[in-house]
Image (cartoon, rainbow over all chains, first blue to last red; front, side, top):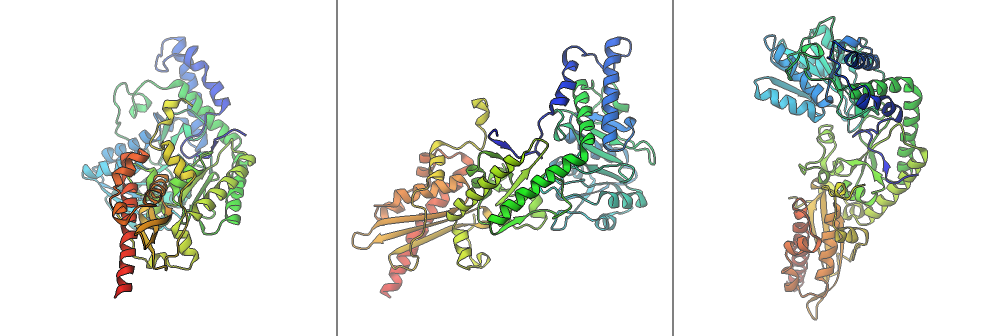
Length: 404
Length: 140
């Protein structure tokens, strides 16, 4: 077993060796520009792109003509929101999203608000879910787009995407979903789920960084977008720029692998995740699961270890690469906005750790992680005045704190 | 890993790591004893709570023992550990003159962690205030 152990698969994933092998010829030997239509080099590159497009489309049950390649999901989210807002502004100026979306959505919404669009931010319930009813209630005659993530990147909660899609269809509003964390982890079908636009990233599904995609529906309805990047009219005019051929080949192969081993892989990862959670809660008191007990992506475990601050916990278990919702780990000095909006108190948000398991996580690694987590939490609780007070039966909420 | 890649925001100095891994004077003193002062500063919602306790030798008016418990990041734990080391053997006046900037220097804290040292200075002051109030009550 190699240390440190990578348990941060939400942040990024290693490129699968099979993906890497598929990509390598496209840097040196097959280097053509996919837009060069009059020679062999261009044709070979174009056919590789076509295959990648087909593979990515299959992952979400789309047609290959509906896939727009981008530099990553941040660009896809920007293009979906700004492109739709600009194209449909005569129909309305209202967008609906949730308060726990990725910053690629929230910061883009803030930008649109400066451009005189109005945005409704739905609050999730305490498990991190947004209901279709809440979406329906927020739709007005001026609403042009609903954007709700398929699965959350911090707590892994899966949203009722099909039900939200249905509401949007009935009310004639376009529906975008950021499916970065959901892809390869839950079944996705743009048809069955009524999705009009969908963002994907290759590096979260064992593909390379720097390549992503936006699915844009072509029929029922035909969705149009104002481009953000101009110059050449690539990707049906929605995203100009020379295509990243090796990236697309890798993305395609990664999508193919995600589908090929879909069930066995996700079952195995979920089993390891449950083993981690059970190992932790059998040995430690006052540990709280953040997110949904069952509607959660396979590799996610988000736990608050009461009375132990997240950054000091990570410092004590540096053999584990995890992340924390503690303020000390963020530049803003604010604890996780996702946990906050789910109603988790700041006191518990500071103690949260996100474990992200993935394709290459082993049982041996999980057993090591359990031991490390339990030992570190115990050591730090011995050092925690809050734990001592709680054990003495003092209600911490009754104390007048001298906060800064 | 390349050395330069390790120098991120989360890099700690050797001294912070040493105090975090081997905290000096971790623990509790009897908060009801007349010669013990307890200072508790910070808030769970802010992610740091420090409790610093001092035991005073009433004949010499010096601090003969000090203990701490801290909920907070590694720098907060290290700052309180340093504070307990420094107050021991000092008179109350000497302890009051410890400045947060001394702790910043000792641990080479980055700007984002300066509030940890402020908290440690506040904890020393709060512990001394608590002891003085106990003494006043006893006289009255």
